[in-house]
Length: 165
Length: 213
Image (cartoon, rainbow over all chains, first blue to last red; front, side, top):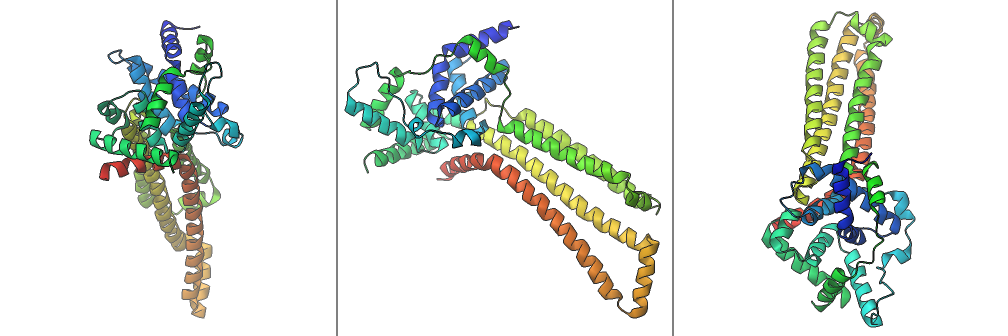
């Protein structure tokens, strides 16, 4: 039987599920891994839910738990890693929208370059893409604002180098 | 960087993900977590159980009963009490560390707390190995001074002036046995935690590098 608390939580997660999907997209390399990580993030969010006081946005609170799960807590299953498909490495561009082919390819290359970054660099890029300022990035990752800025510039340079060798 | 700006635009608009229903999300809540923290806690409990079991198994053995007949409680009792006090201390620490770990901390702080937990487990294992080593030495000395068969053998060697060789062989065998046992335990320990914490350590190192740069 579902409790009110569970109902409330599930509604919030469903509403913000794209955020979890986006984290999974960066940190996993197959559909099976994506599902595994999504599940683990949901479990971790539920575990931390009693501490969520509502004084911050639910989505902001999700960033922290989601990234912590992806970077630190989640254990990749070996069986799943071995069964990964090479097609899963590239990000799937929706077919319905009328994209220019060249742009599609470029985007795919950028996603592939991001997949090659280490876990911390991915977190920085994720927070950057989510329009977080350096203060928020430094608080989420646990490093100083200056270092977050320095590291972000390095990640950008690294990506640029990968995309324009 | 124009590529990143393009990506940012796509990131916002492209939400081509499978839409999960409330029912599906609800089932996730009741699934078991495979979190690294849970595994560290399970392993530390197993280690705790393993050493307690060793104590229980040897308690009623023939060798232990013979050992008890030597009336060496004055040495063994304090050793046992110290052992149990330290065991309780470690158990409390395991639990405290485990409870302190929070997935809502910053990434670095979360990693620090996990590594602290692992450090406690490491200290616990070192304590057990040192305790095992000291107990073995004390036990061997008591056995040598009280065991009537050993006393007889020693007296035979005394007559042939080969006592030092006898001691060297016995001492050597005991030392090799202890070293082999320690190596197996240390190897097992590094294997288990090495696999479990490899990625976390790499990521933590990455954050530390940022701080010192």
